[in-house]
Length: 73
Image (cartoon, rainbow, N blue to C red; front, side, top):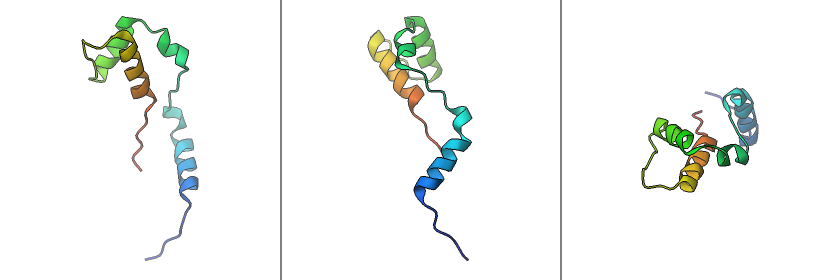
C-alpha cells in the first residue's frame, strides 16, 4: 500500500471550493431585521425553539446555527 502526504490546508481549500454552492452566509443585518415569527419558525424547523428565550437570544441562536457548518470528509 502506498500513499502520499497532502497538506491539510490544500485538502481544506479543495473541500471548501467543492461545497461553496451549499454555503449560505448572510450579513449580520439580515438576522437583526428578522421578525419574531420568522425566527421562531426557523428555530422550530431546526428543533431548537425554546418558548422562554427572548427575541435577541433566539436571533443569536439562529445566527450561530445557520453559520455553523459540519462537513464530513
